[in-house]
Length: 437
Image (cartoon, rainbow, N blue to C red; front, side, top):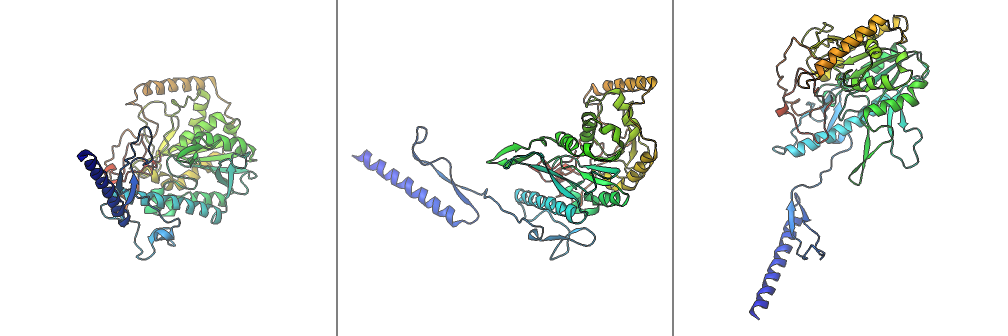
């Protein structure tokens, strides 16, 4: 009898404790109350599920730039609407996780803001892919001007990897510096002035999330596949016989793949301007004819502390294109700093008689073979191998970020760059892989 009474007392005590904890959780607006397991009896559950308090409450953020309290001024700088101050990462003191999520949410709003600028300020049109998508099928998209497929000249702009999307070089630059250096707008405007049609890929829009699962988008499963799809269904139909390409960071890998996979593209492309590209003709298995074509028609503006356009010596023999300084050691700024030089390079290449990529002499082929073998030899040791954007003569120190730039996320870290302009310890963690390589 005593045992039964004891069991009843224990059960009553547990029930009152659980209810008290529920009340405590409900009364605390800063916390959620969750069950560790279902309270429904089952084979693996004795019906005594336990409540516990969790501080990981689902946080919601504004969906507009104004909602975050920011706007862009006449100079294209993002400023606090009330104080006029630049972006500050630390929204909540001593809550790095919240501040990081706040930054990421702001970044998503910035992406939509740039899309709007592409459509309203420079009059590009959004085109959805795949072109034969079914009614409920998930789609990606890219942007191009109305005359992109009819102009006699076409400029293609390709961003790097990570969270950047169409129209962006680097999210951190948009947030901490200005739209001029962080977006492709200056390139689009100048290209339009010089009679180019414009096409901008959107290679990082690869999947959608449904029920916590990633659903890949057909034709855009990767940045490379996205470009090939856009090329096959749009670029291949362009009237332009003079195509130029600006490819930043991982965009270099994308265009190298595209030039090798898209039939007829190589004959139309007259110049490729890489900006701190991380491509590798060795790893991307380029043949000797394409290696020769690259040496003749491309140039890579790499991060360096030397003056703009200063020739840079590669770390290994047989570099696949000319290397010149972009005039900055910051990887994400190379497209901005090389702006005028890139357009000058395009002008020079377009004036040269069209090349078909097929007039390769026997001597040139043998030279390409020899240099390709040199590249292979250099690549055998992965610790020693690097892409062609390395400056062998300069070792740049780390650059200490400013107060407002320390919080900008790891937008644009070039894994193969010799310089590391941002102190990793000062950068926020980013679950979205906010990189651009």
